[in-house]
Amino acid sequence: SYITLGEVFAIMSSLCQTLEYGGSAAAVARSWGEKFVDWVREGHEDGNDIPQWLNSFLDPGYGINPMGGIIAVVCTLVLLCGIQESKMATNVVSSTKILLILFMIVGGFVLASGVVPENDENNPRPASFLNWNPFVPPEFGPVGIVQGSSILFFAFLGYDCICNLSGEAKNPVKDVPRAVLLTLLVDGLVYMMAALSLTAMLPYKQISTISGFPRAFGANGWIWAEKLSGFGEIVTLPLVVLASVQSQTRLLFAMSKDKLVHSLFGKVSFSKSCCSRKEDKIGNISSNIRICGIVVVLLALLVPFQYMDDLISSGALFLFSLTDCCLLTLRYKTRSESFLGNTSDIDDTVSILSIVAVKEHLSLGRSLVLLNVFSLLSGLCFAYIPISTVKCSLAITFA
Image (cartoon, rainbow, N blue to C red; front, side, top):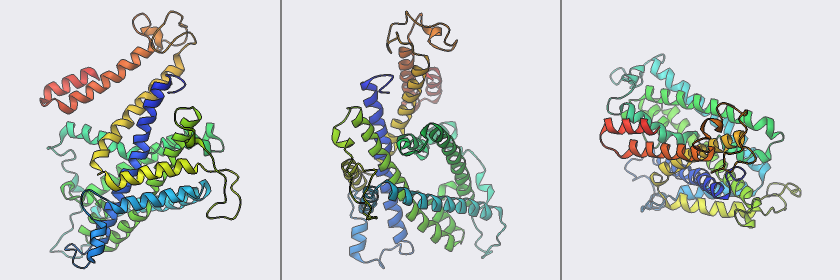
């Protein structure tokens, strides 16, 4: 954005990325806090067996999430130890998380297939592939699919973190594009399989919004799998918080080098690592990490998840749309063309799909701006017009 469109669009994109990284780090930290409380209270639904002081600490009320703040502090401290230590923690937890997800997917399909005999014939398991019928619940319909997709876009955030961390790669020109494509492929495939497995284990109306897989295993009588998956989520979910905070610090570091934020965010400190006696020759952006960590901790501690979810998804969608605009501008913009005007000196031989097609009416910049405006209008029509026919007609027209 900074190279192709200028400082204004660079600030806009960085604000959207801050929503995506800093906001999602806080949102996931709160989600982890809720899962941790649910895990502690497992088997103690009445709360009488839990000490009163612990109960009050875990859930003080007023929307405060102490465990979310604590895990954000832990992730910040890991980053302060240095990139080598955080890389080691990321590799270990990532491997564990992939194994856990594969276990939950396979376990769900095994239960739904009926291969494992029933423990209690008088109390049959709810797991069955018949739970997919109807595959699109009538109360949702096509509108629900689109709304669900826009919300679940949050689940795919993170693959672009690779771009922010490209400065850590040995061969970024080769490694980063390959990593982005493979991450998108694996992420999409695993997410779809996990969704199918979970809805096969339990009817969608009975799925827990806090601990989906653990509660689904418990409802099917696999108590050991419920314990394992619940504990696994507690151990592996902080990886998302760690990676998001790390990406946020790299974003501010890059902005500092472009003079878009204070130079404090670009200051590199050299000191002995907390996990090693050797002198740190790479350096660490400690001040940057501390500031980002404090903000994430406060958000995770005080701001409920539902206030951040839609905001993060909408910001990410706008960010990716803006990125596409930048790529088009880089591909087809000539030296004599400004972003919002002057198409008098355009090379007509560039491409039939370039700005040649619209140069007599609009420049590339104006076309891309209108593209984003129409997309926004389409979303607003889809969200706020109550009459279905008018809603879909206007949304399709603008789209």
